[in-house]
Length: 144
Length: 114
Image (tube, rainbow over all chains, first blue to last red; front, side, top):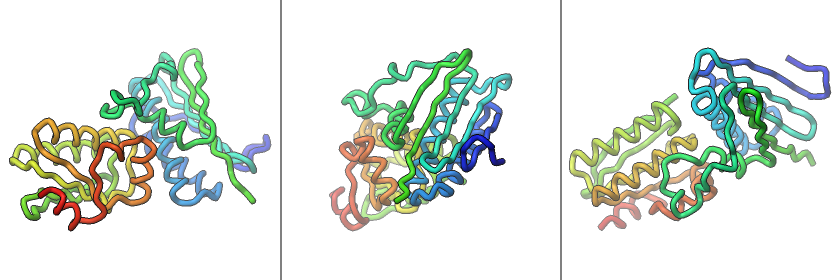
């Protein structure tokens, strides 16, 4: 689906709160990252952090509630690849996530998803919705 | 796509050849089960060969940390070998490379258990 508002490519998906949604978001993110021209390693990292955003939405946001949806959008412009994932849960405070690089955080089995998003993407934004939370992941395209 | 585990014994070391994806769900549970079974069988020296692991997410990283902790708590030793650039980059970003004993190849890894 091509939109008419300036994006080269745009898609918006409304998905169920199941783990299949995680796979769909990951696959779509990979497709967009490849279309954006990122190298294989970068595309794989973008796909992985998009997967993390979807896992957060399905498990932590919507808590797999079948009555709640996950909303994922993919936008490719001349400058950026932007992936947005929103849930309909109770929202969350990104600043409350413990630092996984701290001595006590290093050996914890969880808590690396948000950190990886920030490490890999150029911009990561969190927004509270009512209800829900939205994560926006942006990777700049380097088109010399 | 999920993860496959093949088990071998080399010079007293239990080598787990992992392939596929270590991700939330089947992949991470597969690793957890394999470590649990190896420890239950009395293995104290466990080497994870991740040469054919092509994808790890944060849940997969968590399982690697869990494997390390389980083996340590059982009085054993866990090492990794044959990291692809992709996997190594992830361990660098998350500083997990400072925790794991990582070897370039099997010969070095087996020797390091002695």
